[in-house]
Image 1 (cartoon, rainbow, N blue to C red):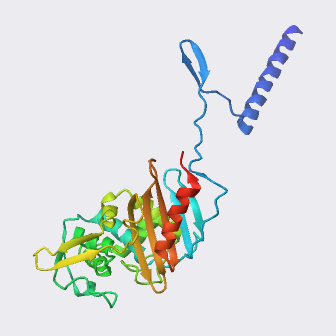
Image 2 (image 1 turned 180 degrees about the horizontal axis):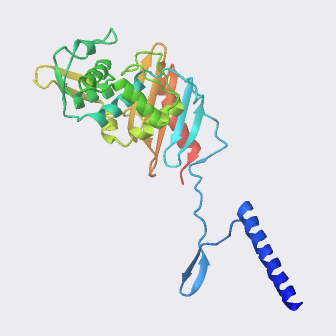
Image 3 (image 1 turned 90 degrees about the vertical axis):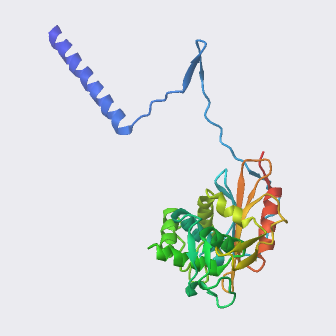
Length: 308
């Protein structure tokens, strides 16, 4: 009898253990194990990493009023937007297109490669003639012209050169955009002249953040003027920057302007936050006062937010 009771007890114990195992497995009860470190034979628990909420908004500040159809202010360090206005709206972006042009060209070609200008890259907008047929310039020279004076001819010359190297520049620009999660962006031409191309302020931030890895590109955009000479020394181009905020706002890292009759004024501006290892990216689209909007947005951010 005693042996039967012992056997029954063992069976019950096994059933209890099996049920407990399945209960824990099914409901996945987590084991709470504190992070304990031993130091000098005394144990203490390491507190979790504190969450940083910087920059902090002064809620008493009135929100900035902008003329632009769409605008965004993005803080690089905290990876969040400090200001938003219609950031998901698809709009033509004019010459802001040239940022992605520059990224692809920078990744595909050497800045020292020589480009021979074709007729398809002369007076492409039907107005200004920046280049001459048969002229030879380096990729770097064309990038200078594209970023400093926003030359449409230079943008098309880079497209032509890419084609000569079996690279479809527009296709590569769209592929890069998709890889960066810019799902509301589509490029039609290398300069942004075709206003059926589009992007959003939210998407453009993604492109700019990626492009910031190439400081050589943005350093061009900080030059107020430059002299570009053809490789044979026969043709000289004196170029001036289209960014009217250079020398007006401090701590500018780089930027890009854009304008067409349909897109209106567009602009990207990146600035360092004084005394902080941080940058903010300001973008406006569809503005009748792009420089005023960007200036107001940057100035408002520095008053409205506290970084320490």
